[in-house]
Structure formats: C-alpha cells, structure tokens
Length: 410
Image (cartoon, rainbow, N blue to C red):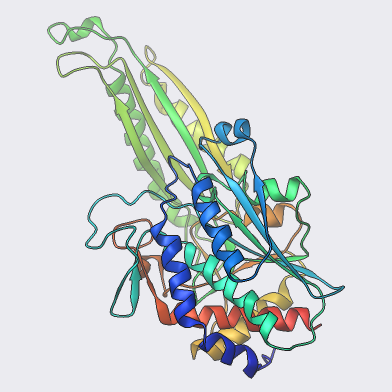
C-alpha cells in the first residue's frame, strides 16, 4: 500500500520535538516499578501531562481487592478519546509500569539523562516512550486540518509487567472501550503481528530437616530439586527442534529464573521452591505445553519418592497471532515506517510476550509498533542503562500519526 504523505502532520511534529522529549522525561523521572506495583501516582502525573496537552483524560481506578489479587498496590487506567465523527475506533495502548532498575547503571534510572542523542532511564524504551509517541501522534491529528472520521483512543495501563489482566483486559471486560483495531507498544524497525506466549510454574519440593551430623535421618529437598532441575535442563535441549515457522519467533525456550530454600548451612534442607518460564510459540497450545511440562517434572520427581512435589501455575499468557481485519492496519504501518525509517519494514514476530494478547482475545486485531531501536538488546530493555534513541521517538510518532490519519480518513 502506498502511504499518504501529509506535510501538515510532519511539520507540526517537527515543531513539537522539544515538548515531546520533556513529556517523556517527566514520565521517566516518576517511578512506577512493578513490583511493588504502586502505580497510581504515576498515572496521576501522566494524566496531568496529557491534560496539559489539551486532552480530556478519563481516570479508571481498578478496585483495591482486584489490584491486590494481582500482586500490586494500586493501578489507575487512563483513557483519552478523540472523536472525529462516525467511523472506526482505533486504540493505542502503552503501559506505564516498569521492572525495577536493578544494579549496574551508569546513569540515574530515574534521571532521563540525554547522552549522545539517547535518553537513559527505566521505561525510556519500554514503554513510556510510546505513551509519548502515541499522545503526540494524536495531538498532530488535531492540528493537521484533515477531514477525519472515527475515533482514536489512548489506553494507558499499569500492569503489563504482571500480565495485563487489570489493564487492557479489565478495560475491555468492563466495557470501558470497544475498539475495532488497536496498536500496541513496540519498536521502530519492526511491525509485529505475532509473538510468543508464556507459562510460569512454581515447583515446591518438600523434604524433612535433619542435623548435618546425621543427614540420613532427614529427607533432602535440595537433592530432589537438583534431580528435577537436571532433568529439565536436559529436556530443554530438545526445544530447539520445535522452531516456529513465523519469522522472528525462533524456538520455544525454558528458563529457571528463581530458586530458594534451606534453613542453615548445617541443616538438611526441608523445602526448595523454584520458578520457571516456558515460552510458548504461536503454533503451540498453552494447555498442551503445561501438561507436557508437568509430566517432565513429576516423572523426574518419581526418582525421589520420599520427597513431596507440588506444581502450581503462576500465570499463562497465550501467544499473539494475526486476526482477520488487521491486514490493512499492518500494511499501512509497514508502508509509513518504510518511508520514514528509510528502509524496508515488514511484518514479523518477536519471541517475547506482551499484554496485546488481551485485544486479540476480545476479537480486536492489534499490531505492535512504537519508539525504540532495532532490538531489545540495543535498548537495554529490562536491564541496566535502558535507553532510547530520540531520533526514533520522533520517527515513530510520525509513523503512528500518518497511519492514524489514513485509517480515520477512510
């Protein structure tokens, strides 16, 4: 599809770059770590910044009991609606919660320092940048003098790091929004229409403590856990043969990310708990993946009959796959991105998972595109010195604005 060039949008955004950087910097300077997930203060700052741009902002607090059930302290979802008349409704979703900074930073994680054209700070790339890119793209539509039809919405949510159930899923299930199409946070050199799902399991191995002088009087939970872990590591080597046919996805992955247990150096461990992450490629069915993985764990546990083993599901997220009706949006994004970025941009998949799946679960086609460099590694996403090239922030904003203009121009 040939993109529509709209000089008024391009010229307006060129004059807003300083304001857009200042907007993003304020978002980065306001902590919104999840965990612990006390995100209402950041939502308040974001709402006031949006109101400063002239938007009317709906604040939708999630009930405290629902927030607590999802392991968070507070969450307020924000919705901005810009009506241009009858026509399709397209939503733009970005999340304001971020993973905690961790160690190893050379910049203040909340400093929004600009170094060699890059902004450094937690959330600068994932995905506070897209709160900025989407907001300024929508602002450009108001100043472009284009005859538009339909509605563009901003959905700013605060639980992507915990699964999206009280963010996008809650907004849709409560009937607060009913879009026809959606764009979710992404990076600037890819239009993503598919991604992995994930399964998180917790394995608890229970033995019986004993004095280290007579360890044979106890049941060593760590020995049993080690046997299970060894089997899991051996088994995961076979996942390489299950590579997805979707470009960019790769093969399923298994990671044991957390482990704890034991009482003291001179005591036989009575309990060991570990958690694992199993990435689910789009061709797989989540229920089948869980059944297989539980089987591997429990079979390995059979070698330690005196130890008790329980497997608990922590979360499951289904993969994102393209829905009918999203092809035109994908084509428009690719066309505009190819021209603005100066190279061919085509649809692809990514091996991570996002809360975009909640839109497809509701029957809403969604494509991921936003501000960011070529890869999560280059962005230092989820690790020290997270960063965003500001040139890509400006380009992504233009791509989003031009795509919205074409969708809403009919």
